Image (tube, rainbow over all chains, first blue to last red; front, side, top):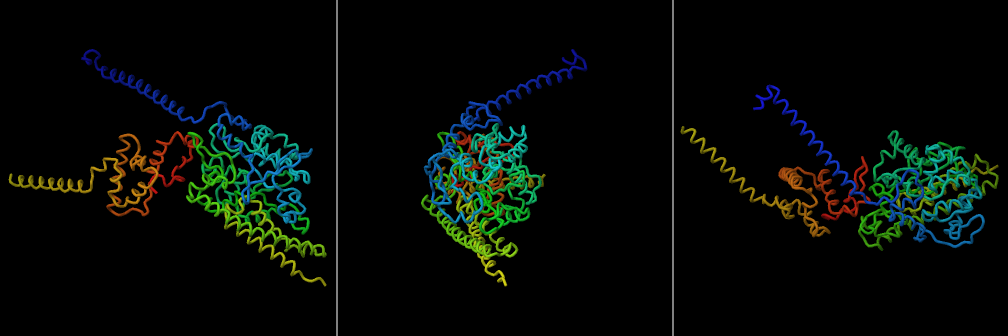
Amino acid sequence: MVERRLGRRGPAIWILLVAVVAAAAGAGAAALLVNIVERKQEARNPFYRVVELNDETEDPAVWGKNFPLQYDAYRRTVDQVRTRFGGSEALPRTPNQADPRSVVAQSRLEEDPRLKTMWAGYAFARDFREDRGHAYMLEDQTYTERQIVAKQPGTCLHCHASVYVPYKRVGNGDLFRGFELVNQMPYPEARKLVRHPVTCIDCHAPDTMQLRISRPAFIEGIRALKASQGVKDYDVNAMATRQEMRAFVCGQCHVEYYFKGTEKRLVYPWARGLRVEQIAAYYDEVKFRDWVHGESGAPTLKAQHPEFELWNQGIHARSGVACTDCHMPYRREGALKISDHHVRSPLLNLNRACQTCHRWPEAELRARVETIQQRTFDLRNRAMDALVGLIGDLKAARAAGRSDAELERARDFQRRAQFWLDFVEAENSMGFHAPQEAARILGESIDFSRRGQLAVRDLKPRS
Amino acid sequence: MRARGIAGVAVGAAIGVAAGVGGYTFVYARGASYLTDDPAACANCHVMREQLDGWLKGSHRAAAVCNDCHTPRGLFPKYATKASNGFWHSFAFTSGRFPDPLRIKPGNREIAERACRACHRPIVEAIDARPPAHAPLACVRCHATVGHL
C-alpha cells in the first residue's frame, strides 16, 4: 500500500519519521533523567544554606550560620583543662597596659627553671607558658613578653592567626606574594591585618567543604619533603588523599620551622626528611642557628612544636591514623555524625578518641598513655640535667679563657643535645605520638651532653 | 536403523544419568538454598563458619543477614552478584586455590560499603561527601567488627 502511494521513496520516509519520533522520545527521556538526578542531588544536601560562603569569608561566625554544630564545638576551645602532662591551667593575672589578659596559662619557666639555662640569651628564657586551646593562639602570641625582648616579624602570624584572607588581600589576590610581604613587616604592623585565630577557612574550601591547604609554608615544605622522597612537583591540594589531608591541615602549623634570610621567609626544614637528625643536617647545611647561647657561646637551635614530624615516626601514622581521628573524632549530634571541632587532648575524650579501635576500659587506656608519658618525662628530666651540666661546664671553660676553636667540639655537642632535647620538650604529646622515637631522641641527647662534657674535660691543659 | 536405535538409547541414557547425578548433586549440595537469604546457606561451605559465628555474636545479627550487606539492592543486581560470587566461590573452594585468610575483593568491598549507607545514610551525610578523585570514606576502617567479628 505504502509502496503504491509513495513509490520507491516510501520506506525511506517512514524510517525518517520513526527516527525523528525516536529522537524526540530519547531527548525527552534524557531530560527526565537529568531532572531526577538533580532532585536526588538536592536531597543529599546535608545543611541548610543560610549564607553563601566564599573564599573571602574570614569570620567563623558567618560559617557558623551554615554549620552551627561545628562552630559551637570550635568555640569550646576556650576551655582550659589540665591533663597530667598537657592541657593548661587557667591562672588569673592582673591586666595592665602592655597585656590586657586576665587569665593566662602557667609559666613553664617557673615550673622548670632549667629551661632558663637551656634558653639563656634567647627570648624564650624571658617568657614561656603552657600552650592552651586554639581560641587563644593569637591573643597569647600578641601579648607574650617574647614580643618585648625581641623584634618579631610578621612571619609569626602565619600559624597563629587566620592569615589566608589577609595574605590574599595584601598580595592583591596572590597568596604567596601576600605571605612574602607580611613576613617582612614588623609584627605590630602585621598584627593589624588579622582578626581571628585559626578559623574554618584555614582548613576548608568554602564551596565544597573539602579539606585543603591554605598555608604557603606547608605547601613549599611538603613539596621539598616529597622531592627528597623522589616525588617531583608535589601539589598537595591536588594529590593528597582525604586521610592524608586529615593530618596535613594540622601539619600546616604544628611543625618545626625557621625564618630564612633577611626576608624572614617561613621555611619548614624538611628538605632532607622529617626526623630530628635529618632536620639538624639541613640546618647544618644551610649554616643556621637560632641564637648564640648566652652562657656557653654555642650556635644553638630552638625546636618549636614538632607534632607533625614526631607523629610521622609513630605506629599510629604508620597505621593510617591521622590527627583528626584522635583530636577531632566523629561524634553524633542528634541525627548527624560530624567531626568534633573541639580540638583538645584525646585524654579528655577517651571513649570517642581511642575506643573505636582500642576496645578496652578507659582506665586501662589512660594508664597506658600515662605510663608512656611518664617514661618520656623521666628521660626528659635526665636529658635536661645532662644538658645543664654541659652548659655549666662550657660556661666555666669559657670564663677560664678557652678559645672558640678549643670549645668548638663541645659546643657542637651542646647544639645537638639541646636540639634533640628541645624536639621532645617542645612537642606536645610528651612522647605519645611516637614513644620509641621520643625515647631514642632523648637517649641520644643525653649521650651528646655527656660527650660534650667529656670534650670539655679532655681539653689539653694549658701550659 | 538398528544402529540409530542403539545410538538413540545411548544418548538418552547418558542424558538421563547426567540429569540424575546432577540433580542429586544439586540437592545434596543444597543448591536451592542459595536462592534464599538464609545465612546458613552461606555457611554451607565450612570455610565460612567463622564469619557466620562472628555475625551471630555481632551487633547486626538482628538487623542484617549476609545478603543485606554483601549483595546490592535491586532484583537484577542482587542475583547477578549472587551468581558471580556463587560461581567464583565454588570454583575457588573446589580447586582449593584461594588465599588464606580470606580477603574481600574490591568490588564486593564497595557493595558492602554501599550497604552501610543504604541504611545509615542520613546520619553520615555530613561527613560522607564524595570529593572527585578521592576515595570515599571507608566505614569498616573503624567499624570493623559490625558485620562479623
